[in-house]
Image 1 (cartoon, each protein chain N blue to C red):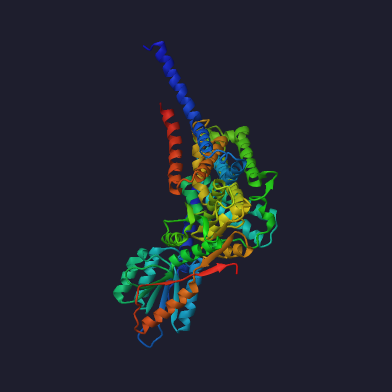
Image 2 (cartoon, rainbow over the protein chains, first blue to last red; image 1 turned 30 degrees about the horizontal axis):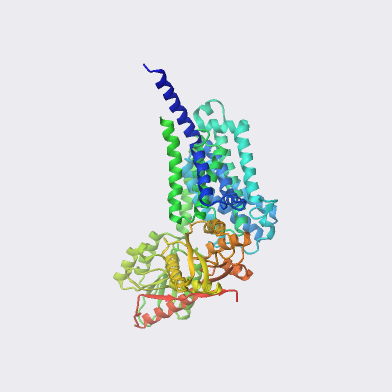
Length: 324
Length: 315
């Protein structure tokens, strides 16, 4: 028999747990900002540095946001980094050959959509695991970029107008940040406010039940990969514009970082489900941490250790809180 | 039913692609057994012909070898080291007069090298490395590349100020460059290396660009940073772009490798002031001379020859 006070204590602990697992990572993120601002007052929170951070995370945010869609249906897309490189190479090459700005960008995006379609077909219709299928296409896309460029960097003859996506500003805001905000808003809207989005979540929750409920599970999973392919290609275009050159492996770091961001996001606000606001905070957390540690002049190797530790901590905290 | 059809199609595709690979796989022409006075056959084997630099070095070697009247064969295994061992063994079976490794780590092909050693066929490394049976390896002097670029940067900033180094120590070549550069900076009492940043690969340009942005924030005043030394050209490009985007003046950047994009940046007259090119043509030429001397009975004095690089500056 429980006394009233022990009951309320249990209740209190449950509330605290729920609160911790829902907001723990976000509180950690805010704490990080506070610590960086206190350690470097006037520098970390300066408008210039905040602009740097948003600009630094914009490309990763685009990839991570569309990666979220794939992870909502319960899959992965390991090919996004290689695909970003490939679309970057394609857009640069077309521009160098004299193709107009918008046609070149559209072709690069079409490459992304086609690649996503291929991934989706392999996973949803040929029944391959997403890990195996996208691991294979990642390797193939990387090979295509290297083959296309002969391993070299494309830079000579890119027209000035191409600075539009990764280097130009609209008012005080970098265009890359505007593109990121557009992708965030559109993806959030699709996932949260449309029937299509709710169906994607249903497939991720229980594919079998969704199928029995009459959803076209295959088409839904396929479409998630197409969205991810498009996002990767768009990121590749922005990256190539930012660097004003196309390197055949430039996009590769985006893959693991985007998955890490989605995982971080899954520990926030809503448990265990990928969602756009969480992913965005995850991306910001990674970006703020690397920027802040650079400004604090922390050793590069230690930065990597800290990044890994923070991801583990976030996931562990939300997992532990859930188990109780 | 549909699944069975898909499987059948996949199988056909697999068989076709395997067949295509087999058909493409190069068969090295049988070399004339090399007695004295006959045409010498030199077999070049490489895992990296797809790499533009490797391709250039090997083509130059082929040119110099043919000029000496040799029969030079080139075999590429497209990054497959297992196949590379087989190709070395093929060359041994054909009793070629010498084998040249085009830029592959000999440690990854020991079995083939031992076969060559057992057959008494000399192996030479063209920017490869040393290992069992490797008579001599010719390569760039990474120390000199680091030292020259560091000296150029030090002189460009008038021998004083704060310097940032972009490194990648896990790569032995880049590490040797950075160590030599740091030693060179130490010769200038008024130069301080304030930061040594590890640059991640792949994606070094964007990584270096972000790191540079952050460093410019951490060191906000003109004169806080006088120069950035990068262990290779990609991070130098990223640093240059960040400096230009932040409209900071008074910071110069040097890189290493003399890549085409670095040359283009240097020509623009921005912060990127110099790089240094590895002399692959010189390497190929000297290796051909060394092999010729070897055929004439002159054994090289050392198992390693280092070729200095050539500075690339705006002048």
